[in-house]
Structures are given as structure tokens and as C-alpha cells.
Length: 132
Image (cartoon, rainbow, N blue to C red; front, side, top):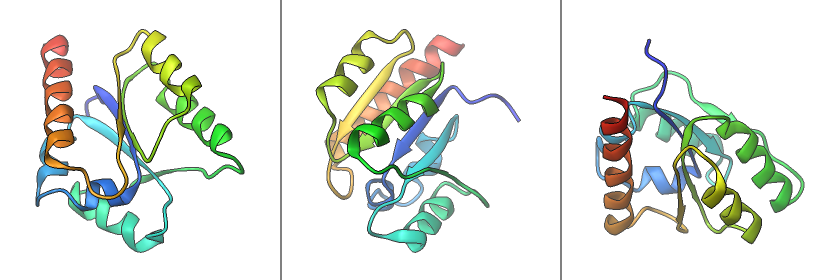
């Protein structure tokens, strides 16, 4: 198995609302981890099925939004990152702007709108071009 080009961290609702096979096609060169949301295990299972995975990573939950952001930041490591969440603090936005690997913050509640899916597609194409 090849090393991932990027990491994706998202709430399940964002990926589960995408058109069929979009997540598997678009995120195939990445490593997907989900944040637990109100959909619980059922929503996480749907994401795993959507990306064609028998198992999926779950980012541990934290007591505060700030701690949760720090955990996602630690999970990103040295890879490019697509981070899909309901919102981001100023500290997370600053981190994303200053870090060397490319980072795409996508702020959305619920399913990804078509415009945001296109932004992610462009980002992933750019990453693929850099890796070639």
C-alpha cells in the first residue's frame, strides 16, 4: 500500500451527504479520519462504506473545542490536510496558513455543498500533480 498523499479529517455528516462514490474517488489517495458527531457509530460506518474501507480511523474526542483542534493538528503530522468541520478558531486558521504542507479548511455544517466538493477536488488534483 502506497503512503497517503494527504490526510482528511471530517465529521461524518460532511462526507455522507456527498454523491455516491465521490468520497471513494476523490479521497482515495488520502487517509481519512473522522470526528465523532451526533450520527455516532452508524454515521462512521456509512463513511467507511462510502470510501470502500473495512476500517476507518476515528480522531479521539476532547473536552473542549480548543483541545479537539490541537488533536486534529497533531494528527495532521507532516502531510497535507483537508479538514472539514463546522468552524475553526483563529489559532487553527493561523496554523493552517503558516504550516509548510498545504492545508484546506472547509467550514460546513452537514453535507458538503457542491461548491465545497469542487474546492476539495481542485486541492486534491494539485496535490496529485505535486506528487507526480
